[in-house]
Amino acid sequence: MMKPPVKILKYLLPEGFPRSTLMAVQGEPGTGKSMLLIEMAYKTLKMGEPVVFLTMEDTALTTVQKFLTMDWNVLPFLKNRSFKILDCFSYRLEKYKPRKIPERIKKLSDEISLGVDLVSEPDNYDLLWSSLERDLEELGMVERGMVLVDSMTELLTVVSDQADFLESLKNLKAKVCKTLFVPFVYSLHFGVFDQFRTILECFDDGIVDLRFSPTGLQKGLLIKQIRVRRMSGVHHRGEWMTFDIKRGEGVVPLE
Image 1: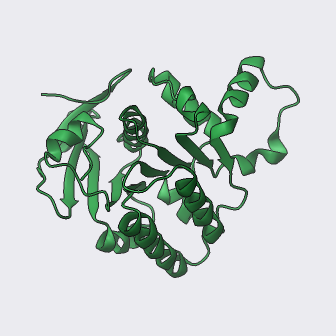
Image 2: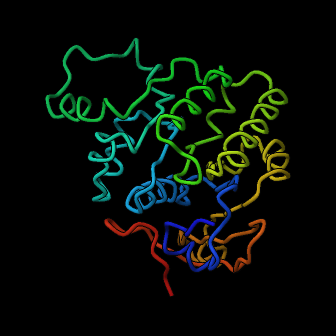
Image 3: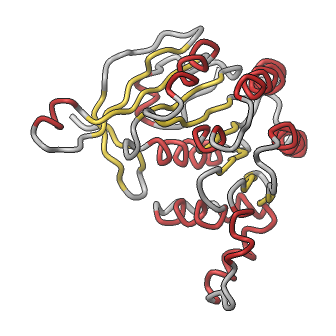
């Protein structure tokens, strides 16, 4: 069992969750999915466990800046290689490189380089999963650590055969979650690939939903809420909980 690294999930999952869990974090854009994954990554590192983070929608550099903006310094973890980022976005920037990079950006880029692997063909998911498995072996991730993907929606936009991709994901679940006992957590947007999302839900072990409160929307307010819809093998609380995101704290439950 793994203790949830995020406070609000500790309440919703009082027993924790199995380390063999494939978990989906789902919701509309803007509901806090990426921030939840970032907090899960940082708090897992603070627990002394390694993390592999696949960033599909942003560069490794910008992802690290998001951590730093929250006052979560991941630089030591990148330097000691307990934190690995698989950058599946920067290949898009090859033809847009600026003539001159600001010194502070160059310095940060150099600082994180030891912990970053660039993926030039994320649409080749066999190669992508092989890169992930190599990092898991390098970090000695057996019954420890976590893999996070932000987001699976972006990955689905580049794959050519969804049925083949689904089969590869099932195999990955077997290798990572069920053999190595490493939780695999991915985010997914509502409103895009909804039919495929429904199929994915059939073999997810856990589903965490995020939404804007319907009552808040009626008043013109964007109030974020979270619930655990499913978590195989353990008791969970299924009610919606309202939360905010605060610098230095992350996802904070509200009354």
